[in-house]
Image (tube, rainbow over all chains, first blue to last red):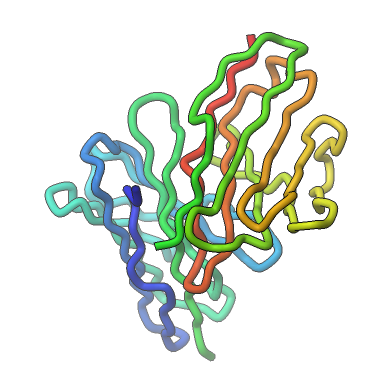
Amino acid sequence: DQQVKQNSPSLSVQEGRISILNCDYTNSMFDYFLWYKKYPAEGPTFLISISSIKDKNEDGRFTVFLNKSAKHLSLHIVPSQPGDSAVYFCAASAGNNNDMRFGAGTRLTVKP
Amino acid sequence: GAVVSQHPSWVICKSGTSVKIECRSLDFQATTMFWYRQFPKQSLMLMATSNEGSKATYEQGVEKDKFLINHASLTLSTLTVTSAHPEDSSFYICSAFIKDGYTFGSGTRLTVV
């Protein structure tokens, strides 16, 4: 069963604009959420995370928002840069074991 | 949607024994399967890429003789941790590329005692 869903397979934005990547989850036990970035021929690299006790976490151009009631989180990239073009995965974990469930990914293309 | 079924979800084994982890593509054919290992602070390391009918491609630093990968059919890829040691304890995840993105297995938590 897909407990973590990224319903948009791809997203294209103009350089300098905001990129918003969305993620939905079904398991209410998830209490830690992560975003990963993946370039071709490489494994996903950790980008930013958020605990369920927060609703926002910001790191430079990247901000993750968590809406627990809607079981929804989003990653905002402002301003978007061509180097941000990659596949972004949303992941979630529950409890202390940190074992993660992943979404299918969203391919972001930032056009110059 | 495309599903990768990964088993077992967790396993405890004694040091020195071998453990096999299976990933099956249930409703699609996976010519390529990626195997990852999760490290602390949520870092995810690509261990190897398995290709159906050919040898796996291992990432630098991954011991081929220790982490045996077999991709004998279009629906099954296996990772065998041979002569497991406590430092091999980790969370292992497989993933396949599908038409609209990637699909991940549910992961295997390996504990070597």
